[in-house]
Length: 79
Image (cartoon, rainbow, N blue to C red):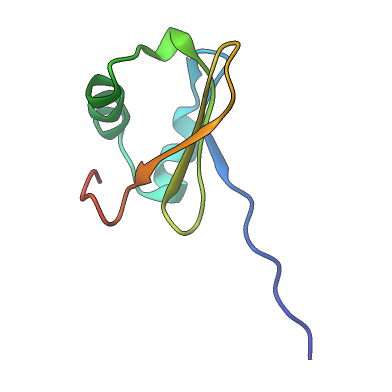
């Protein structure tokens, strides 16, 4: 029996730049991301990378810092 591998997380912000092409793949809008960043008190330019996986977990790494799990999009009704 072959197990399926988990889907890779989609990059939503890479090196301070928004990757809009991935938004529709994970069901978020630019406004969702902007609201999340406002809630966290950070700007897009401060982010090295922000990803969203198939389970709704957001992983964010600010420049020169370790990554952290921000929230769960689905549970917190961000999108």
